[in-house]
Amino acid sequence: MEYRRLGSSGLKISALSFGAWVTFSDQIGEKVAQKMMQAAMDAGVNFFDNAEVYAGGEAEKMMGKVVKKAGWKRSDLVFSTKIFWGGEGVNDKGLSRKHIIEGVDAALARLQMDYVDLVFAHRPDMHTPIEETVRAFNHVIDQGKAFYWGTSEWSAVQIMEAHGIARELGLIPPTMEQPQYHMFHRERVEAEYAQLYEDIGLGTTVWSPLASGILTGKYNEAMPKGTRATLKGYEWLRRRFTDAEAKQKIDKVGELLPIAEELGCTMAQLALAWTLKNPHVSTTITGASRVEQVVENMKAIDYVEKLTPEVMEKIEGILDNKPAEEVDWR
View 1: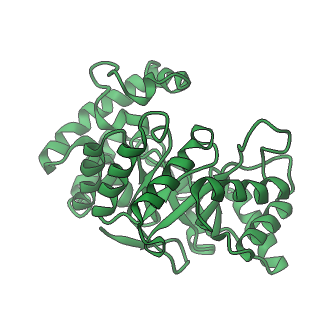
View 2: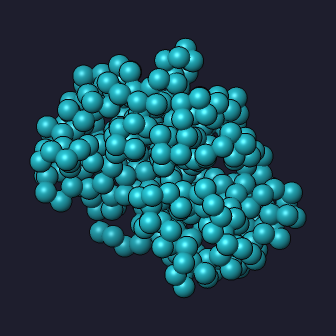
């Protein structure tokens, strides 16, 4: 496994990591979860991602039970939670000081941990002043309940505003951002954030590297049974595979498959390795519903160096969606 610094921080996290979204509690039970986390650790993974909203908090409970029963050394591992959607109460959502502090406490209780290494603002909150949010996350860190805070799906403008407020007030600025990033979704990571990597040393923990499964190639024939797109409550995801845009993406995956075969890897491994060719990706979060998928995904690290400039050029020729080098967001 390769270990990368989280932006300009001193923290090192595995280039491939493992997340609980969709699968924990919704698709798998505790025993399978432990086997999958162990398989990830055996491959060198040290970062495990979670959020208060995943399975209504049950994903955190499951991960916490797994860690406690397994007796893994806490200091060897990096855990995260994300705060925004905490419940149905009027103050159980958003990024108010109240919800951030209470939400982190509730997440720690579910995880059975004294602290998380990373805590994210899961989405921007248009109804809460960014200064209030910055002060609240700074308080969480001062209390020793998290070591770093960051954002998820914030714009470059919002991130820079939070960073500027923190610097002005002598508080801790956001260290990392968790954006969606894969072969078909590139603009934000490659263009909008381009200046942020240099100006503030932004780290990234990217999610959905397989485009919710499209980039595995399993949707090239028909909708397979038992996938997350067939789960109750994920009808929105199923619709993504049936429109005209999805058909174009699936066709491109068909063109990419020969490249994967030539390299001797699966389409999923090619897609994961592709994200890691971007030096601004601190870690790529993977997910799985079977232990075998974890083992396969982790082997993607072996193919990063095989993505030579010539191979990358072939991939770009098929994707034909490379964004401009930098977006003028100021």
